[in-house]
Image (cartoon, rainbow, N blue to C red; front, side, top):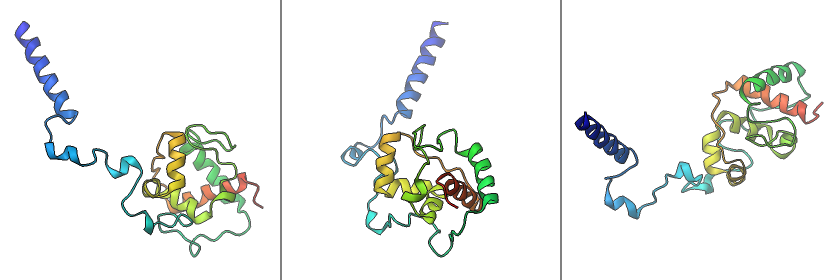
Length: 163
């Protein structure tokens, strides 16, 4: 019985040591131990346009005219499922920042790029990185379809008083 316990402890300790990175390459200690994606910094932020964001949306494929109430209604429904566990429609921070005024601070294509492609923007955008320092939680990729993202944008516009 005692032998089984000792054997189990040795195996558990070995697995713990391996899982925590013990026994790795000694030369790696001279390199940064934190990957770029965890630090929020990239080697080449000069290619990033903070007004456009990182993704396929720009002024040419995100046209905003008068508020589309049907799209905003769909956007509210999607937001209730995918967004409101972390965001409020007011200025108040929940897990992530509140949405009030976001469409006056950011362009529609920037918002669409961020909500459909958050990881590269978190890694490159200095303002998003500053927000991450306040919120302490990276926005997860919700795998939104383009139309879902557009509907959410329209709901955000409605929330900000667009007509």
